[in-house]
Image (cartoon, rainbow, N blue to C red):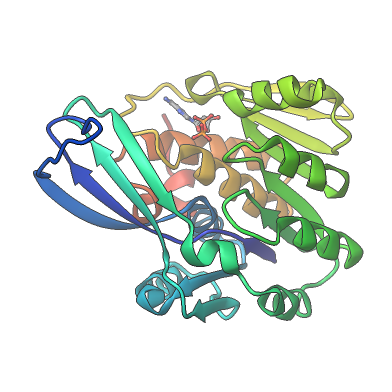
Length: 287
Ligand code: ADP
């Protein structure tokens, strides 16, 4: 099974004629709300990829709809705490050219109670996967606790934070970064992805595919040529699919193969968590 300590956001997308300047007041021409957060996207992706996924996280009283939505996507939500604080929000402004500006309010994502994590870990079994990212609290505690319990620890180092990476690096079995984050990591600690003390490292490179670094060396997986309309969520979907594949017992090459197809399907659609393809769509996708 997969245990994902991850963010849960309400994403508010406002269409604006242009990104407002300091002091400017602007009317939006439209608003939509979506389920979001990197953690949520990864849980939904892994569940759609047919893994057993337990989300560990927190929302406010205003976030019960998000729990319901995760349930509908097949995610186990028993370890999502409902707190007396507000659910995390992303306020996303998008101009007609597709340029955006985003304010992230961490809310409940930053206040996941330690007891919630402990309750989840009490049910985890040796060999299960624990996923962490940088949009919640308790990552380091979770990584150390998970390692102690014999779980495999996977980390998506996004949004990038050098101190957080270094804090969890010794606990990791699996690290996934995009090209920008890989460069930031190398800059911060002076170590290239190939030389990190982590069993499996994957660097995703958008339309240029992905590289897998392991004891066997580097292996490149080209992306599938598609017409991209919206790349948000491609990385989270890719991560969810790789880990679901590994958890289902696939060799890494096949897990990355499915993730590459899922990532390509994602960039062909608008939206994030709500449009992540399921395993049958991925298997039937023969570009
Ligand atoms: P992130 O969203 O974290 O920056 P990437 O952009 O590297 O992640 O995308 C993750 C994966 O999704 C890539 O390795 C690739 O397989 C797939 N992907 C991303 N963008 C494209 C694209 N334009 N065309 C085809 N596949 C893509």
